[in-house]
Length: 328
Image (cartoon, rainbow, N blue to C red; front, side):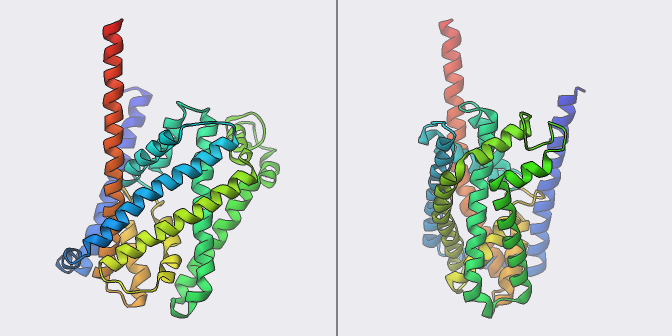
């Protein structure tokens, strides 16, 4: 078997293992808290609120496409907004059905290499994701003083460590000079300075400029408020009656849990995280798990829209090739 075949087989096995881990973690949680009780909560969920959450999720994809466009323009690249929106919908499909929340980012970067240099495609995807996370973490820290009275100490310190550390790392990555100096002594292909791939990639990351990054952060603020509202609506739909501020606190930790590459679409990981975060507030495990499953259902439904768009585009491309062959 060729090296490419071996790598592909390994990826299939890894994906299968991650799927089993995610499903196993969810099954263990449901067995522990009671499948019947959780299903009963889901059956009583307010479908109108979930419908609004679904529409907001679709809107969030359009908002994020606008953020990506700002970063690409800062590098002198003019990619049609419709193309970027399409890629974000396709990314949502892969995020929902591939291991970790980064699956869609990889697909977006690969697809964009048809329209832009590879380093610019990957670099803007990284900055796009980074600005969203930075604002989410800042929102969590900003809401902390207003919510600390009813938060468990462990949650407070977890948020401070994760969000505070993430903000510091993010600013250092975007600033660039310090990391370039720290890696200047490394061989060319490992250094963030110079003409190697990593150097060119990092040049794209830092080359967007603070003005474009500032605009991206402003758009990220809008997106993250929409994302928190989606979580809030999913919670309300299953009967969670907590203040909106608590969702500002928990959203960063939930989002970060989705990036752990041990499941598909965050299944299992997100469910345990939501149960752990909402249990101390008096929310039953069945209700918290139902909220998590509702959140996945909303994102997966939006992902299926992206999957349908991806399939239609594939059929169009196939028809174009067939017409080209016949014309030849």
